[in-house]
Image: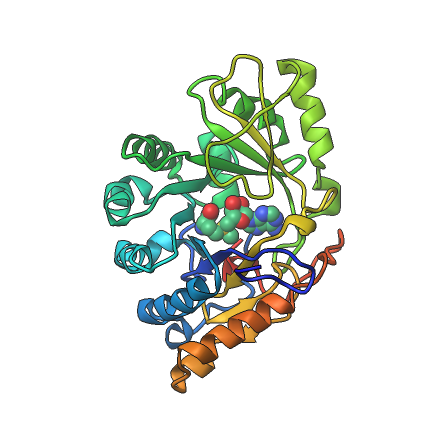
Amino acid sequence: MTGLFDSHKRRIDYIRVSVTDRCNLKCSYCSDGSVPHLPRPEILSYEEIQQVVQAAAALGIRSVRLTGGEPLLRPNISHLVGLLSDIEGIDDISLTTNGTLLGRYAARLAGAGLRRVNVSLDTLKADRFQAISGSDRLAEVIGGITLAQSVGLQPVKINMVVLGGTNDDEILNLARMSLDPGWHVRFIEYMPLNEPAVDSSQWISVAEMMKRIERTLGKLEPGKVATGAGPARYYRLPGARGTLGFISPMTDCFCSECNRLRLTANGRLRPCLVADDEVDLKGPIRNGAGFEELKRLIAQAADRKPKRHNLTKRQNNSKRPMRQIGG
Ligand code: SAM
């Protein structure tokens, strides 16, 4: 078998790279600011990220997703996209963003080699957007989505984290966006990591989300998205151009299909999103580790992937907040 495999025989061909732990939104369920920002010198430079991805590609990594924090806050992020798209073996570069700056950068990112984007959008109501994120930039997000589609960053996937009493009354409205304008919308179960204390009574399962959609909008038919299926299960409403995806880390974990490693903003490779085991790459890189040493450390992280996550419904499953790991 060629490629990178973990000790449970899963092929590892995907790396998610958090390029910053800073964000211009303060989403109530994601960050309460209690974990301080990483000092800037701790954050990997673009050239250091390039070194990691080069070594990872030599082992068999094929896809890279840039995330954060908010990746579009990092100055000249399209330069990083260009560096990564020149790496032999990397054939898919994508980005997860809150969309506030997407309108400004979409064309440049597409030109640099970015293929597609996921946009986080938990509400279609301006006042609620303000209440959840502390920002009045909903219109910019919607504009960014339209622009990303028009410059060919396809498919654009919309990610909604559903919380009872916060935005669950908008499940149907987001689902309708798959009919017109044909969005690909993904509904995500909240994961209790670090930082914000979300009341467990707010937690809603994917099964409940699907039930609510089917009750009003009709039976969900199995669906597919063109690229990057990831952990979501896809369906389609009757007659819809877009799809509805459901991501159920809590109730139906997809660990047996996990194909990814995560590089934190400060250069630690995490075998699993929610386990605090990490392999330090920044220290070795800054001490002059060569290509083969980096490959060895990356293979070590892959080998340490747990068979499944140990997420529980209690808060604080991880020392790091989501914005450091990269969601
Ligand atoms: N700033 C970018 C964005 O908003 O997409 C990228 C980083 S953000 C941490 C990545 C994703 O993680 C977002 O879709 C966000 O909604 C999701 N997220 C944050 N905290 C979460 C949690 N506790 N459970 C599930 N998803 C979460």
